[in-house]
Image (tube, rainbow, N blue to C red; front, side, top):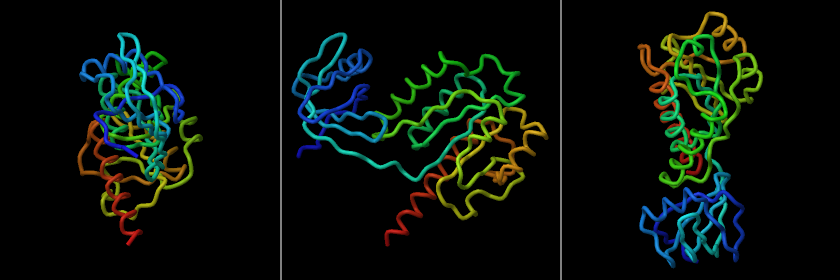
Length: 246
């Protein structure tokens, strides 16, 4: 069956082979900008591993319709959870975009004490709406199939208590060099706020099994630390998966 497509779009409703899927107004606008025409073949993703292929049968200002004739399912990559500080709004949006491109499995924003000193900061439902839109755009452009699971804002104790089992790393300039460590998924990467963690917060993370790891013997801004560490861990996990196949 034909998987040759012009572009990828996000399907916000369930896809069924042999039926028409209606895309949102935003995706219809994106299709017009891309000069998509009736009859063009598209790839649709639902953000939860579902992938559909089909042809455009209607394109208007408010919606686009695609007749899906083929469905695939893509398993998630080895799992990386991201604990991010509630911080500057625009820089959080950038991290959310890159986290999607690098296939982070989840996004958990933490209100550290120093997070409260930031303005304007990325928090609340209106910010999550903007974040999801950025993530959807990153998903369709990167060719991925999974959106990060976005959790509500949480204080440190609640975020740590909800942290899933597995390897737990805290980005810390005094830690062991991250590239030198053995790596096994699932992995949680915890990123502190601008200005650093309070001693009590750091103690809480260490007590919960987080191991300090470093990218460089320098103090990095939270967005640099998040994006760089996620990229390194994703590459290392991909390499480990390839070695296991040999």
